[in-house]
Amino acid sequence: MLASLREKKKRRTRADILAAAADFIERKGYRNANMRDIAAAADVAYQTLYNYFPSKARIALALLARDDATDDRATDADADFVEALRALARSIAQRAGQAERELWLEALAEATRGGMSAVRCLDPGIGEFLRDVLAAAQQRGHLDAYVDTREMAAVIESILDSSVLERVMTDELDQADHSAGAARIELVLKPYHRIAP
Image (cartoon, rainbow, N blue to C red; front, top):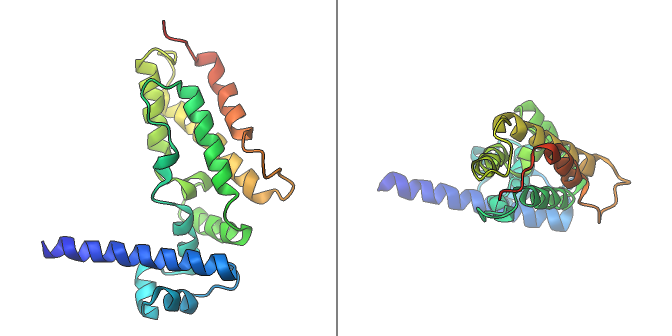
């Protein structure tokens, strides 16, 4: 009982720190935020902040990896899986454009040090989600039975990852165009997509 109360308090403190950091960064900019300012905004001791986040880059990474990322995912089992994946790609591209570039660059550097892809910065559970969607589509007869769903999920994740990087790194990218990754996913899946009877 005591351990669960302690865990709840830790989760609440972490969430409070992230909320304060997001607010501070939105008002002052990522470049102007430092750990002391974030600790003060979160109303926690400076050392307490370091217990939760050892660097500003880790805060950036946590801000990108929203806990509600799964809310953007289609969960209807009867939905067209290609359209569900296209919608996911558009949502991820849109979210990639919402954070300021400097925050992204530092978060990507931190993610790379930890072996994490750009798309996993936004959605740490993306790989498992993709495998589940493809396996369900295969079971319903919407995806050829010989397709290795693990491999196909890795290909789609790679497409999403390149879309995120393109979105973050290219200043000229049209901010309204969120469909490049979606079109690439559809192209990769087209030969294997079967319309069930």
